[in-house]
Length: 110
Image (cartoon, rainbow, N blue to C red):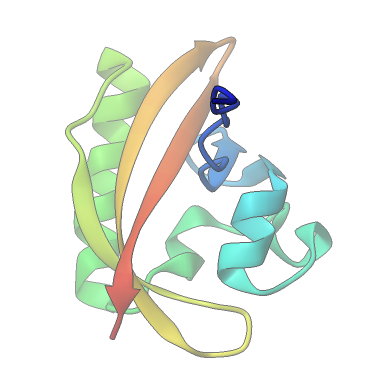
């Protein structure tokens, strides 16, 4: 019997940002949002959210992240570059030097 090879889990969509603007996005993030990195880099993080009402909540969360280097996970509706909408939860952590990493956990289509 041949042992099974260990397979790495798929990479999660990740964004590096300063809590305002996206600085870097990985390939999984580009795939989830169905666009190239140059369409996402330098974009305001709030532009990814569908509901303008949630943008205020997201800004508050980013303030917590800047001030306390942590913020609770939360679930948002996101709009892709092609206009389709999906749900995802997001966790964020401080990388130091004013940069943060947000990881999205895809939950499904609208």
